[in-house]
Amino acid sequence: MKRVLIISPYFPPVNAADMHRVRTSLPYFEEFDWSAEVVAVDTRYSDMGQDDLLLQSLPPTIKVHKVKALNKGLTSKLGLGSIALRSLWYYRLYVNQLLKREKFDLIYFSTTQFPVCVLGAYWKRKFGVPYVIDMQDPWHSEYYRDKPKSQRPPKYWFSYRLNKYMEPMALKKAEGLIAVSDQYITDLKNRYPQIKDIHAATITFGMFAPDMDIAAAHEREFENLLDTARINIVYVGRGGADMHKAITPVFKALANGMRTDAGFFSRFKFYFIGTSYAPAGQGKPSIMPLAESFGLATAVTEITDRISYYRSLATLLQADALFVPGSDDAKYTASKIYPYLLARKPILAIFNKQSSAIGVLKETGINTVYNYEDISEQDIHGFLYALQTSPNKTISLNTDALNAHSAQTKTGLQCALFNQAIGQHA
Image 1 (spheres, rainbow, N blue to C red):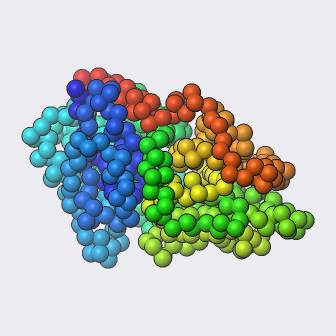
Image 2 (cartoon, rainbow, N blue to C red):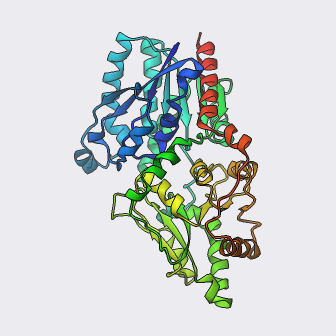
């Protein structure tokens, strides 16, 4: 059986979005003749929240190596809080020793903590081990160059220049590339002609049904964040100004409805939960200012603090319906749609018309998915009226389509790429 060493700085019980590909693939790697081990940063050095229930989803035999990182309290004084930069030296030391002792056929970087990926070229040169990079998000991006300073990520000046320097160091020597969007791969191959012929595959995150079983089993342990006297429509995930185009049609339709039939439309409440990546209590609302501009302060609640992963899933199960807004970035693909589908609640989804999420949702049987250029007020009002007439509704989905997007299927696609990558290297 071939061996893959997975580099994932965040790993359970840390509750970080970028480790879910690895976590939900681990139960299936051996089915496709790959034995996996993970190298993660010890949770003592993590700057993210934790959810111990995540450990229940891991195969009991999985081997997880832990590395140290510099203390964030010290490095933040220099403006360096990234776990990738804080752990880079320790990753180098630890994996050097591991590769001296043991043989691995492939190294797989699956993380949005991209600076660690530069070690791939170093380990390939030193030990002859090929590597694959998983581009879950863009690394170096021009998206924010023309955006107002208020919409740019923290420390954008520094991160833009660092990413522009480090990305080619990692990409040019890679044997394989996985991405959640076709456009990510196209952009990278256009940017770096050296990789135009490497094996690449677009593979979204997989749908992992056991997560819903864990959430349902522990649902009563979580405080209900919702107003049980209202009809609750829930979104859990990051916010940001790039989602305003998808959210604005809903707020506009709701505000107009309140003016014409306040008795009906005041029954609905929209929740946006976990919208900021900032530490608890320090997040800045990015959705409420938009809601307030439409006079919807009492119809919308934004909770900037992130909540634990399984509490997020439990909240989806407690909701009457779900709302999934997408970014105005055409390259954005919402892997988060899979938990929404597994909750089997009515879904209202609005994306950029080029987003791959639209096709996935329609394949599975969701007919209330739109792009923000074409959605009408009548579409939104129709969704709300249907909720009122069919409360506590459970939706039916296309089983074949769900299986095509399962974590098991997606793991098989990753392993096929691994096989191509080591064949190319040989």
